[in-house]
Length: 446
Image 1 (cartoon, rainbow, N blue to C red):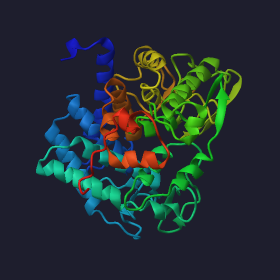
Image 2: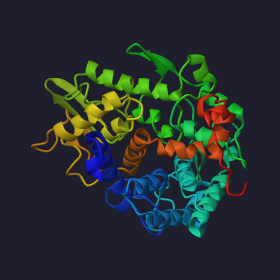
Image 3: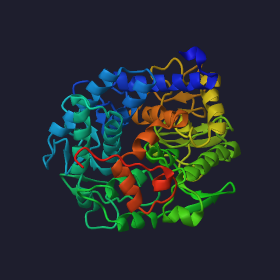
Image 4: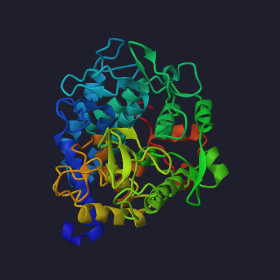
């Protein structure tokens, strides 16, 4: 099979196979929950579980998973969320159609007194809707997948999560109520608002999306004008599911670009920032870049070559503004593949073959590395994160596939909730227009 593939296709297949193995091996097959990261006694992440649900169809099409196994795993996941307790009890799985950020891998109950997370619930629901779009045959199992995914999406009470304000709240805790933070400023909530606006049962008003857009920051960096967000993942995660090429909301119409082009510019800004390397970190160059919210080697303060360096643990790293301690995330570079393959592919080659950061690790790329921080003796690139994260590996599988075939985008262009949400947000043009081929597949109960 692979002998007929080009070297680039073989490389991308290898990347997807390594990353998808995480979902094969770090999932509880009884409930479908996916481990957040490979640390001892760690809980599941609902976002990673959503990415897994979206990845199973890709794995089937790429020969990484049998279709009957994907159906079995998907049904186990959806049945778990249907049957798991929803309520105000502190050990529930969720409430009001949303779910706690972290769940116990075995019981599926809330872990760590964490928050009921609106955005992580959105990633989970988007994964469910991907499964519903892919498993379209008229078999009993596939019909059940579509019905459960539909019902679980319709259950989410987005109006409740607005909690009397204009924008959506980050989350809620049974002990203390709604969190103070709201989704404002350009971020990964682009998908969240689309799903919330598209709901037939508890939709947000269009004014909520307009309120969110009013908090945007338009900046010029390295002679590129773009809608700013520092961490690279923000420019990627909503694009896992939604094809923003050629469609525009009011903000982007005024700027003359779309969100896809915006992500392309953000990707180039990251590369130029690394080439500039004003802070003098080891390794940064045109083939070595990619700063995002991530794991890190700290907390620590060291004097290295006469310069005092402060290193951090998990932080919302970003470029060209924000925290930068020399920590880079190879996965975040891979996830920009659809936007800027001309600079991403050479960086992937550098990470894999020059720095040897991929092969030899169980699931391919570890989360992050830091060449400035002293790592293990003999390391070619300083400190390397000991962990793999589901939230990092899912975008490798999915954004690589969007680059190769557009598969996830094609599936979600037929999801009525995504289409309705985009239209209510004011998006027009491209595939959304009838002449552009925007075909909406009815929901199971429609």
